[in-house]
Image 1: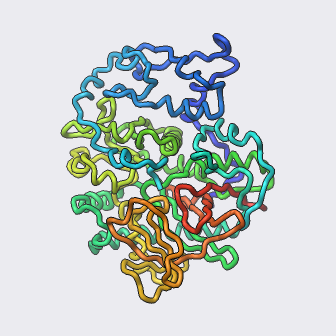
Image 2: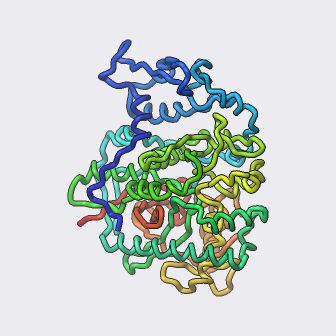
Image 3: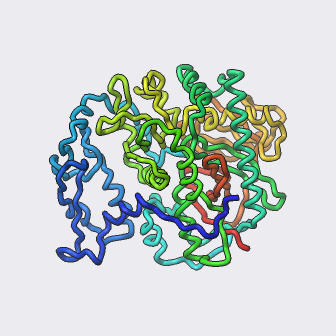
Length: 123
Length: 380
């Protein structure tokens, strides 16, 4: 039976995203701000988005959770998920597949969610 | 099984947020309860574990029975989806999870299935991670928890990996919902730890090229986990592409789960397993012999549009937008009641094994999206 008393939990994705969003004391820069760079493609150059990720937050706490949410905001037009001030050159890179992605029809799923105001579409 | 109270940790909110749990409070009202909890006994956990495994097998038998006998008439599933459901069942397309909701009378040891959230169960992250961290904060020693969810997820993804189509498993949910995104990202985290390559795509960003579903970068989607109800997908514009997709993309949960997430499964289970100790009597039509019962829409979510009758008089009801597809009638169950409210137990089946529980508490005997999450411990 799966009742575990010696569980050792490791969260790879969630921990790394939170860590990348929350300012850390040992990486101080410019009045304790952590510098944050993002790109939406591995062939693209980075854009610094530090200012977007430090507004009103002192690190950790609800700021982390919201920043995590913000990190996956949709950029629109097939550009992927990133902060919406990301420079276009940091989005497309040299990935030709992204250009082709424009040709796909989108928005064929999701309209039922748009017509409700629930906090979750699960059960 | 009983509620116990604690002196609250004044830092409880930031403690939860530090592990990525951002929806502990909704509209100013706590959804997560930090200062009281359920203490259960080992034998309670054993009962729930065994019942969950048994019900899961019964559900699989019921799916086989429905497909073999074409018993789709009360499910109101669009006819064009039936061949897809049958194909995914016959191909053994994998399921990763589901959550049974139980009413539990701990005094008499009676555990009754209220319903099976087989398609888009949520509260996974708080069950697996948040309540485990909560236990380690307040009860670092001499207690246990019925919670092997995290290990079982990684084990199940590892077992499913050879059967997934393509190199990448996509994960999807609707935009602008932190709760669903957290659940999806948690699942993706466990898939990554099982060695699976993953990508996130919001459900409305999925593309259709004419011969393939594609992600935001134009890569074909061959396997995809979606936290988005099948009954919504099948009435949206891309529904036709699900059945015409030349790649036969592998959707998780698979479409055969539409038979189990629909409350029309409850009368079928009662028909196949009459008087089973973990089932409540359930019928498609209002039965004359039942005086105390609940009328549920076959597709309602989070306790919406429920009507509760006692002596054939309606005593509670909830509002909502469901009911168009029809209702079922289920014998009224006794919910566990404490000073703090009425509780139900959510019991997770992951892969093929029961592995953890959660408690949801409400002020009235209907569990809704406003119901509170209560952590638990097993006291040795």
